[in-house]
Length: 103
Image (cartoon, rainbow, N blue to C red):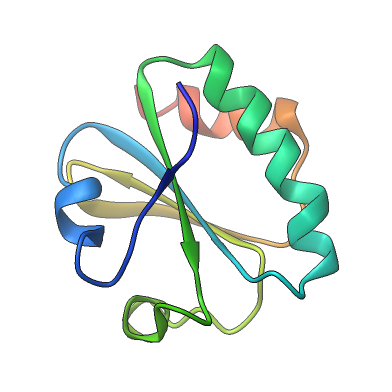
């Protein structure tokens, strides 16, 4: 599996079922460029989690709805409900451990 680009219009549907991780990012964000490959690698290994990317510059409504003030922010949801919010860079091991507790 890989990242799916999600938008303000598709976010609710993209995160409604199962465990999802959404990477809130922007093209100009250095730490986001460090985080993305880690999450992409995890996405290829964890087929039971849905991984989304949301560009905060292109989709400000969803970022505002979840009070995303710093990026990268990783939003973990289970069946559409927020279960964890991670701000800043996280290692692959940290993310796997967090995601596994919701599976």
